[in-house]
Every structure is written in C-alpha cells, then in structure tokens.
Image (cartoon, rainbow over all chains, first blue to last red):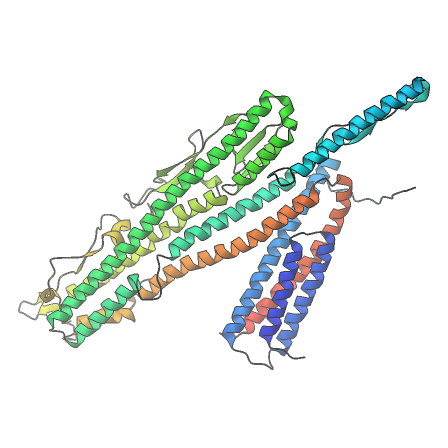
Length: 120
Length: 482
C-alpha cells in the first residue's frame, strides 16, 4: 500500500525508538531483536523512498520528520557503541585475566575454545 | 558414641554456618535500597571427610564476597559524568540564549530597527530638527542595548565563576568524605570488608562523578585512590589533595587585550595548572562555558569577541558616514561630527562603553553627501540602508548588523540544542550502564566468556543495519527539495 513518506518516517522512528529501549539492557537476546527491528525500519524507509516520487509532500514537515528520525538513529548508534565498547573492554580485561599479555603488551585474546558440560 | 557426638557437632556447625548465611541474606534485604550497596554472598565450604581418621566432614562458611564489579561501577560513573556535563551545559546555555532576543521586539535588534527607521524618516525631511533628534535618540538606544547585552554577558561570566568555585568546593568536600572512609579503613583493617563503608564509598563516588571526570581504583589495603582526569591525585590513602580555581590571564600567546576578562584556571594542590584535565562533568562544562563560549562573545586576551566586533564596526561605520557628510556647503564646507564614542584602549571594552557623545546637537548631524554625486539627503539614506546593505563596507563578515546579531544568537541556540540532545542520549546511556552493572554483578568469568561471543556477533549485525539506515536517511534528506 502506498503511504506518504512522512508516515513511513514516523513509523520507522517508532521502530528505532523501541530498538533504543531494548538497548537500555543490552543482552545478546535483546540485540537479536534490535537487529530485526532495525531491519524493519530500513524496509520502511526504503519503501518510502521508492514511493516518494508518486506522492508530493510539503518539504518542511518532511524535513522535520527526517531530522527527528536521524536524531533517533544517532541515539541508537550511541547506545550501540557504548554497549559494544563496554563489552569489548570487558573482553580485553577477561583476556588479560585468563591469558595474560602478548609480547607487544596487549591483552591476550580471549580463548573461545569448545567445551562440554556433563550432568548426572 | 563418638560418631553420634560428631554428628551432633557437625549439625551444630552446619546450623551456625546457615545462621551466618541467613544473616548475610537479611543484610542484603535490609540494604536493598541503600545507595551504593552491592549484594553480598557467603559461600559454604565442605570440611574434610575421612571416617578412618575420625574426620567426619560437615560444612563451614567461607569469606563474604561482594557482587560489586569495579569495571561496571566505572562505566556507570563515566556516563554519569557525561550526563552532569550535558545538564550543566543546558542550564548555562539557556541563560546565555535568553540574553539574545531574536524576536525583534526588544534588545539590540529592536534598537537597530528603530535607528534605521529614524534615519529613514530623517531622509524624507533632511532639514527637520525633530527628525535629527530622533536619530540621536535611536543611536543612544543602540548604544544602551550594546551596553546592556555586554553587561549581561559579563554578569553571566561572573555567575559562572561563582558556580565553578561552588563546584570545586563540592568536589573537595566529597573527596574529603572518601578520605574519612579511607582513614577508617587504615585504622581498622576489618573495615575494608565492611559492606556499609563500601556502600558509602561507592555512593559518594557516584555522586562525585556528576561533577568531574576521574578514575577511582581500589588499593590492596582497601582504600580508594582518586585521580582527576586519570592523572592528578585528589586522594591517596588518607591524604586529600584539594583543587582550587583562580582567575588568570594566559601569557602564551602574549595578551593583545591587556584589560580583557580573565580566564578561569583550575589548580592542583601543588599549584600546577590542571584546567585541561577537567574535560567533563559539571566542572568541565562550566570551564568550557567560561573559557571558550563566553569569550567568543565578550572577548579575552587574544580576541575581541563578536559583540565587541559588531559594536566597534557599527560605531565606526556610522561615524564614518556622519563625518563624510556636510551640514553646510560653505565655503568652507562644514563637516559632521562623530556620534558614537567608546573606549578604544582595549578591544574587549567597546560594547560595554559604547555611548553617544552627549555634546552632539541635532544641527551637527549632516544630511548632505557632498559626493560626487552631491545628494542633499545622502547621509540619512546611507544610514537607513544599513538595514539591508549592498556595499561590503557597510557589512560585517559579509552580512548586515542585524543578521550578524542573529548569527550570534543562532550559535548560542545551536549549542543549547546540541546539549539538550546530549542530555537525552546521556540519560539513555546512563540507564544502559546501570542495567549492565546489574547484569554483570555476580557473573562468573567462565559464563561471561561465552556470552561475550554472542555479544560480538549481535553487535556486528546491528552495526551493519544502523549504517544502512543512516545512509538511507541521508538519501531521504537529499531528496527533499530545499
């Protein structure tokens, strides 16, 4: 169904905002859901771009909505980068704790070998 | 019989161990809302069991373990520092923006408009004394508006200095509190494991983090070391190193404006300059406001400031027009006199000292531009055209004086908007760091190593989508007609 681009952008922003909300507690499961939500936002914007030629809209409100969506994406990016930095640094510390330091003085890479668990 | 006694003895020991575990659990429940408190656990350990040697096993308690993770604590403090900085920036920049009224109904834009209108009316009746008097009144209002804006900005600078002093005192006071806890720990070794003291230290550190960027490390003796900006000691053991703030005029590069407003310098306990290390938190924001943002308007030792530049160029431009005009063709021709006066000994004093010469009378204002070409009302027309100038000499930085003022206001507005956006983002980042702190507490290294593998994969997937989405947004913005 053809929708005005501004509506598409509003819908995409709602999706990005909900992804931001998930990233407040970034577990691997939440991140998987975030990736799905962001993919939905991409699809929404892409559809809007494809249809934009057919529907002329006043530029000012459209630009304002685009800026709002851009702001939400910026917030999303900050949250993602902060969470990634948190875990990357932590992995580095764990690497140093578990395997010490390399010859170049960097923390050794975290060993991610296979392991098994026996119960009984 | 001995086995029965051993069993009773073991049971008593076990009950005692469970009692201690229960006590730790009760302590956790009682302190669930205590700021800075971290959950504690008391592990149970098996005793040796060997019946042939008469060792009958049983259970005993190990050392109390805290679920606190200093890495996660530091992450929370880091985001809290960022939030403190943005919140302070919003407060300071809101005060700055309120000094620039761009509605045109008050302040400098209004005074400029009135002056241009008075000049325009004078151009219609060049010989009218009331029309000339209206131009002088309009010029007085413009000078007064420049003075008011400059004084408001200087007052804001003074107010910011007071806030810096208050913040520095607050930082010293909080560090002093932690120094007291350190002293308690040094006096009694067991205090290092006291959950109450640990909670107070971490609560105070979190409170401190909104004021300034620092790193806190736990020493083997249980004391906390605090370094401002990661390098200047604020606290080592029980020794506190207080910081202070003072006004100073940088000498490198040599000052051009010797009477300019001084800058604020942050000093370590040994007197060394540590201003550059306080980059974040409320203190970082206040120092940036006082040493960078406000000087761009009111000037400092090396720059005049945009308000002073505008005042000087406007006054010189108007004076130049008036002194080139004539009140009488002569012979000899009688030229006009300058209207504006200001302290030209220091470029940062122009706006606050700008006045209209009280000795100038209406008949000294020249209407005639002797040319060529000769224009009988040329000077009033030139003055009124300052509203929408076409001659680059009548502009400042390529725009009219009103537009230049609008740019000054827009700069303040943009900084404020950026800080407001920053507050929203920082609030989310702080909430995220707090959630991560609760996630991380008590997780074993082994379990976490597995989770980190999942994290890495998930981050890569998300980053790729964010990059695509961001690119699409740029396409959208490019597509919208200007």
